[in-house]
Length: 308
Image 1 (cartoon, rainbow, N blue to C red):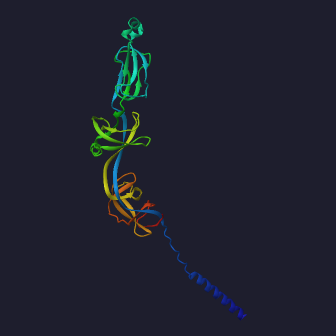
Image 2: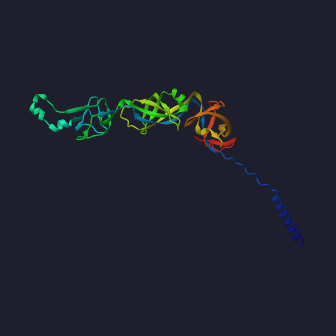
């Protein structure tokens, strides 16, 4: 009996010791893992940069000639139609007077040496394109009446409505590049400015002379890129590398200080085009790495992982 009591006491003490050890044991500290944002980086580059503005210019032909009847009569023949290309001194119309049409060939039968026909030939004064034909064969026309309209191919220009405040800019851009709707590019030269300004838009019409290798229709709208300002050998970053706040009065980049940490660096930006931004300050080293993809929303001193 005494032995049984001792065994029970030993079991009780052992259980108490086991519970005490379990309560006194401290859980192992969990290891904290800092997430890393995958990013791509670039280095600063020195290159030229220009700030442009794109305006519209409309094609037009400044010289148009009107082919007119030189007497009263009927059109015996019409050798042209709209879209026809004609050369200088080419026969366009033949006109027979109403008197000659009335008496026919009676005079020649009476006197063959007289050689009277009553037919008048009308020719083109200049080469160009026929854009309008007013009369057809058999029509009766009066002296001085317009028969057709011809445009002079060499008089092709583009008319650019330039905001007047940009007039000084265009003085430095006498040679311009025009882009047609099909992607074709033409070189143009500003030759003159019309002495009038649109009262509402405050734009002045500029005349741009171009040399086209093929016919260009009238009223075609082309894009004209005008350089407002240009700089060379400046710090340039991709536009995606520069971040800004909601009011766009502060700009910064995320600069790598080692292989896994990026810090916020405030910058002062200059001009920009569609893809690049000029960085005025600070001056970055050639080896400095700046985040261009994955930088949006990063906090200062962020953990990142560079990917290719």
